Amino acid sequence: MNSPDAPRLGSRLPWRAWLNRTAPLLGLLLVFALFAVIGPESFSSLGNIETIARQTTIVGIASLGMTLIIISGGIDLSVGSMIALVTVVIAALLQAGVPPLLAAIGGILAAAFCGFVNGTLITRLRVVPFIVTLGTLLVVRGAAKGFAHEQKIDAPLTWLSDLLAALRPEQGWQLLPAGVWILIVLALLVAGMLHFTRLGRHIFAIGSNEQTARLCGVPVNRVKVIVYSVSAAFAGVAGVMQFSRLTVGDPTVAVGLELDVIAAVVIGGGSLSGGEGSILGSMVGALIMTVIRSGCSQMGLPNWVQEIVTGSIIVLAVALDRWRHRAQEGS
Image (cartoon, rainbow, N blue to C red; front, side, top):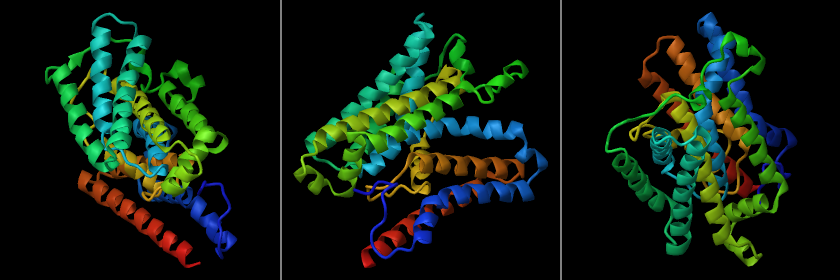
């Protein structure tokens, strides 16, 4: 079981273990410093830092659940479709006069149900997660479009629309918008669950070696269903944040967002082979992508440059992960 805080076995030197653990954070500091030097002065302003935090929130919250899935050795390609479905459900409920809090809970429950279906199909049919979630990506997206009659659903303005809004001068005491604080609290809770609960140990055990975990008495199928359901619930919270940004239900939003979410986990040190990953690393990975986009945007660089840079970082992160695994096997 490879917990990110567990001591490494073999002949690895302490400095190499330390470097491996802190590499994502060092990368974030390096990228930020680079844009602070070569970019405009506005890049390192407090206002832009707040904007970066707000822009990271949606991917950051969704990556909390994706971290659990990737640690367990799975993958979920339907996250973006779930987020779109959540925005549609919330808008429809608000339009029907449902209180905002209940509308948000309704959207989160809709996403959690999709995750439960994913987990059930994966465990009962014994089909690889990639194929199952590739199918549900289309099913959930189609359901969102059908529910919204292939058009946006307008909704009355409520406090949900303020979750990711820029702080007004009189709100300076909050330091960060409410949505960012929600991300921070959820990240701390999930990190605590991973490191201090039986469920967290089971998730690492399944990702490290599913057959061994099963022989040791870990209820593999039940844990997988829980992981996919909880991950989808986090996608639901991300959907609430997406609705806050849009203020409408849009069944076409978040196309391809699942790739950003997976990339955040991989850049943060999560292994697609399973058994490795951390919440801090995933948050740092999400921040790295946002910082790159913000820096390129403020420097006037086109989107294709941002995509090349982000894609190169993802490939580098995966290559380093595979090199690290080969080094461990050879030690």
